[in-house]
Length: 458
Image (tube, rainbow, N blue to C red; front, side, top):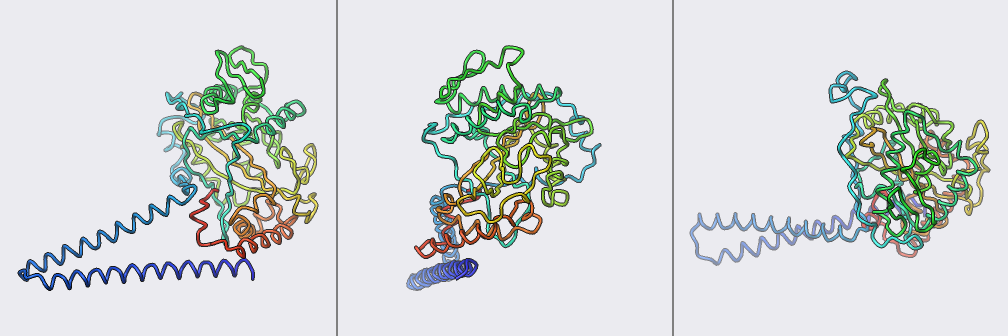
């Protein structure tokens, strides 16, 4: 039995059960109405009063039916591990206003008046421990048959800005090694972006000890890393290193800052990109936002993403913070740089160099959780790019994941397939995912309950 056949049967079963539930509710309502009418027939009241009473009872019956439905929905919602997260369509929609009209909204391009907003102090992350807190299980892929190209933004709380977990030691070590070996290529700050980089460093220095007090301690001049023994002085000038490089040492994320210029465009002028896997800061540094994406052949960027993305950047306020997720497949186990697509120092890199159909043990699931916010003092827009990296053989053990991932991969169009390198691993990957999905179905996995168990992007 093919996965698509099993999915069709599951959908039919859900539809049948929903129909049966509806018929049961309708029969129950009819039965209640009949009993009420039968009882009223025995009561000696005036005809007009009887009509009024009958109408009032019907309204009461309708109200009680609606309340039962609401209560059941609330109870079923409590069974979900995480609620689905809303997008922010107003920020994504392309603007129809001219540049001159947008300028009248409060400022000129390339000029920023510092905002009084400051990030609220976050509560400590509940029960966080560097040895025991597991990575959040982001699985940001959807069932086919259609693959939608969107920014996929959702609003998040400021307290959720940076995510750390028990993979921190590995990331910290990889970053320290990469800074020593390639720091000049992976960490850069242009003079016009230096104030924004300092502001980012100050924000992290305030945020991290409050959010992760068992890992970081605030000091008079900066903060201490209680796990590694490092101390960071962010007050003394000159700083001992590029501020973006110091920021990189503090978190598991890669970091980038986009600066608006008088031409209304945003340029990548500061970054610490040490674990990106498939792209290099030295290739993108100084580029305008649209060129960063077109030079990387991002599918349908011009048609579906460019206008909405520019509109988002121009409208983003310091009080707002958004996140998005994406995913890729990789056929080697190197987190910082996927050597399968070529040497990190090669002039050109591509999926064409990757070995085709490597064994499934070499397949890795790579997912990014990106956040975007505007720095209130400098006006720079900060990307944080946290990569989650797991063997496919690990995540395929999770309920529903192999079937949904297989459906998602099959939904890619030719452009997305080229961009994600599907031709190099697709056959082996899909055969394995289909097998694992079949095993889950045969042991009794209830496909109709997936939405209760896993809500996007998990």
